[in-house]
Length: 77
Image 1 (tube, helix red, strand yellow):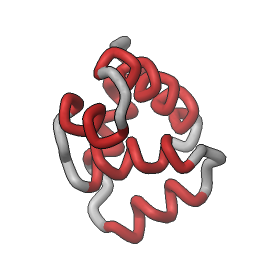
Image 2 (tube, one colour; image 1 turned 120 degrees about the horizontal axis):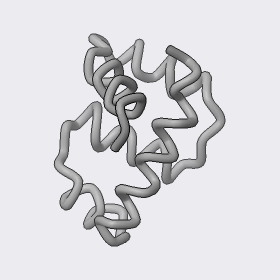
Image 3 (spheres, one colour; image 1 turned 90 degrees about the horizontal axis):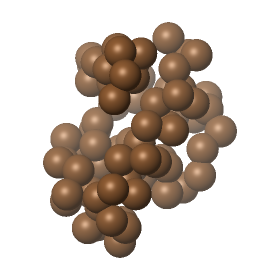
C-alpha cells in the first residue's frame, strides 16, 4: 500500500457517522460487491480475512480490489 492509499484509508476510518459514510458511498460509482467490501471493512470494521470469506474471494483478491477502491474514492478527499 502506498502513501496515498494509506492517507485515503485513514480518512475513511475517520468518517464519524453512518450517514456520512452512506453519503460518500452514494456519491461514487461502485458495484454492489465494492460497496459491500467498503461496508464490511470500514463500517463493520471486520478484518480482511473475514471480509474475503464473507464475500467468497481470496484475501489476495480482496487486497487488490480494496486498493483499486481506494484509488477510485481518493479524488473525493
